[in-house]
Amino acid sequence: MRLEPDTLSEPLIWFEYPIRVQPHHTDYGGVVWHGTYITWMESARVESLIAADTSLNRLVELGYDLPVVALEIRYRQPLRLGMQATVKTRLEPLNGIRLNWLYEIASNDPLPQLYLTAKVTLVTVNTAHRQVVRQMPSEVSEIIHQVVRYFNPKVSRISE
Picture 1 (tube, rainbow, N blue to C red):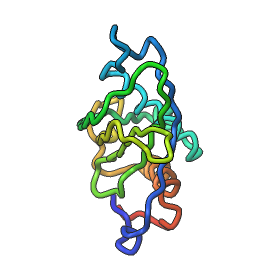
Picture 2 (cartoon, rainbow, N blue to C red):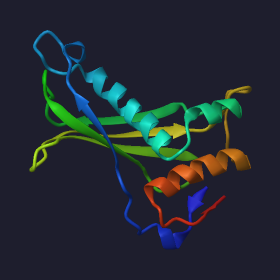
Picture 3 (cartoon, one colour):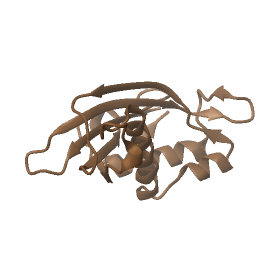
Picture 4 (spheres, one colour):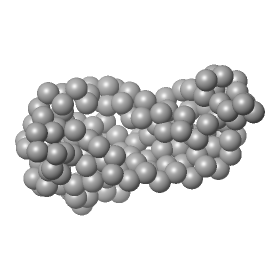
């Protein structure tokens, strides 16, 4: 599955998910524990699917799942207890069977401080056979296309 060539240069929008560092997000020194960032990224991705008027529930009902197959994180600056920030996420243009989600976590300041950048790669799996789906069923393809259109409204179609 890939985007039509004339749509690849279109700018992608970011979904923004606000966070506030609570005591249970931190270690004993008030610094955010590294695994908390992954939880925030997952929450932002799920909320972005809801904003795109779809959800993981529909994929599960159809017998599919989107497991993580790769996770790349660059911790740039630590967040600390009481700080506020925004998790930004977007789906990269499609190319093949991988769904690459990009992330940035930055402060809400006029000159934002970047705390983290990340890329999470998902693939579609048939839950009955636990096998990667190489040819998307039309219902699954439409759900993914709906998400693509959310992040890039000028995309009109995706070719298989």
